[in-house]
Amino acid sequence: MILIVGEVRDRQLTVATLECISAALLLGKREDVSLLLLGTEIASAANQAASFVPQVLVLDRPELAQYDPVSWSVAVSEIAQQGEAEIVMLPATRVGREVSPRIAVRLDASLLEDVISLGRVDESICAERYSHLARVREKIVSQRRITVITTKLKAFSVAQSSSVPGEQFDVDVAVPAIRMKLTGRTQDRTRGVALTEAEIVVSGGRGVGSPEGFNSCVEGLSAQLGAAIGATRAVVDAGWRPYAEQVGQTGKTVQPVLYIAIGISGAVQHLSGMNKSRYIVAINRDANAPIFRVADFGIVGDALQIVPAVRKYLA
Image (cartoon, rainbow, N blue to C red):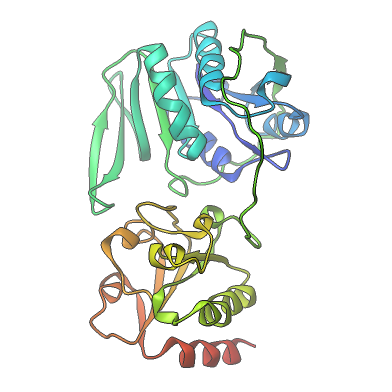
């Protein structure tokens, strides 16, 4: 059995989960795949999941209303053992990266992280992933009977629904008491589509000059294109934008169809988070900026003059 641990946002499966389903089908037949949902109020997501996989496992418990990596890893491991799963898959989100190592330890399994391709060599599972700030592709092979895999966002296509609906089953396992209590939550100011799921990303760096320059250049163009907003670490550290928008080694990795870099010099840490975008457009006054080495199209000049002209042309 291939067990996928799904994620839910706004009572719907995340795009990352649908990509994970697509990746699972590279390793087995559709009838081999099961998807597990944990939490509360997940009936709507379970109904949606039944359109993609033949078996949906639902663990709806009040103890799981608050995400906790320990309780999630225990629950997933128990269900994987009960179903004799040989492969456990999760999207490489924050949750997936926290939970997957714990599951691998509990199952005495191999852990293949952030994979961008999957296949089989004889009886072993092989994969590829990026390393060295996404400048190197390395091949890895599982050496254990059980393998835990996290799939890199945007590396796989979104799964297509099936005309044959799957079955839903309630499952029940002992869940340990949560050792941390959530006392509050703050929401970063974001607009529109999630950064990691966007087809178009408009990002800004210190080259836009000021928070006001960021607003007029990046926010304005983003709104016009229906794009997500990204930022460099320097911009986030300066307090111009929230951390949720940071792209790069210590932020988020994005792989949109179009990435527009405004006033971004192109430090290697930032490039590692966006250099796999299909098309990259760079606007920078420094003709020797490293960003132009990865850009498909480049404009040398002052972003505060160029972006308004671009927006006027698009209007």
